[in-house]
Figure 1: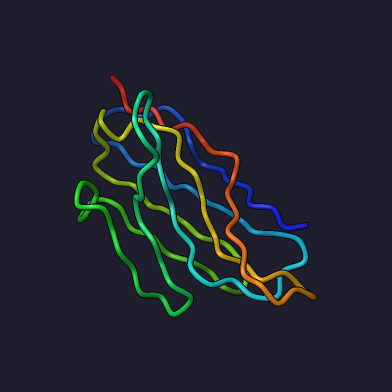
Figure 2: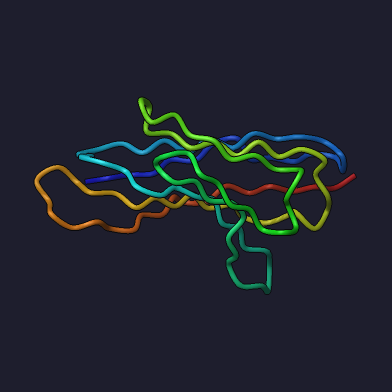
Amino acid sequence: QVQLVESGGGLVQPGGSLRLSCAASGRIFSISGMGWYRQAPGKQRELVAGITSGGSTNYADSVKGRFTISRDNAKNTVYLQMNSLKPEDTAVYYCNAVIRSSGADVWRNYWGQGTQVTVSS
C-alpha cells in the first residue's frame, strides 16, 4: 500500500506564510511527478504547483512569485512554501503523486487526504 500524508495547514493572517509537507510511504519503487492541488468551497479542484522528478516546476498564475514547490527525493516528500498569503488562497490543499509500487509495472496516481488552509484576519 502507498500513502500520502500531508501536514502544515492551518489558520494564518493575510500576508503570512505557511509550509505544507507531504510524505509518501509504503511499498514505493519510484515516484515521478508530484504536486499540490487545492479546492475552495463551491469550486473545482485546481492545480497549484507541480514538480518533476528532475526538479522542473510549474505554477498556477495566481500563485507565481508567492509559492514555491520543492521535493526531497531521499525522503519521498514534497513541500509547498506559501508566502504573502491572500484570503483567496483559502482552500483544502491536496498532495498528488504518480508512483510505481514495488513489484508493480504500472504507474498510479495517488492523493493525500487534504489539509485545510485558511487565510483570514
